[in-house]
Length: 154
Image (cartoon, rainbow, N blue to C red; front, side, top):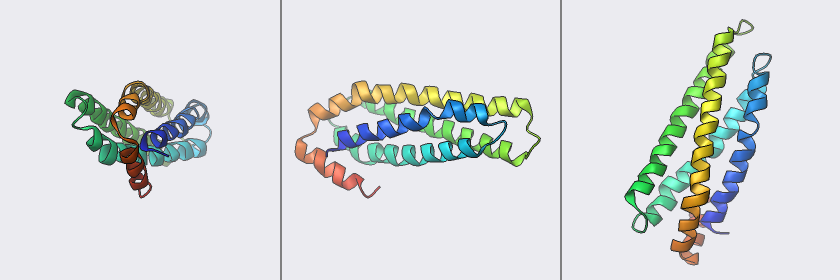
């Protein structure tokens, strides 16, 4: 397998998790367990995925694609991380309220969840349609396979 194929497979797993968020958010008033599981799974997948891109793929492409493109993707990773942290913090706040969950707190948590979904949708689409095709055409098979091997330690 090569690095781009690996990252495309990551996207499939991430999208599968993101698609679980709306139902988990709807159930959140009764139980946060599903939402906690989904958000933790998403955090784990995205953290590893973004590290592979930031530490391996982006440096390998740095000389071949525009600084602006790489900066946009890096900024989107930071925006995604900030949105995830805020969402997870809000889930923790709601959980700490116990049975007495004010509707406005549930709404705030849901808003953070839906915002995260929008950010990820935009970012994953940009990578699928722009970054990955460029990487496939730029990286040699040997380099792509070497990056894939390195990514296994992440």
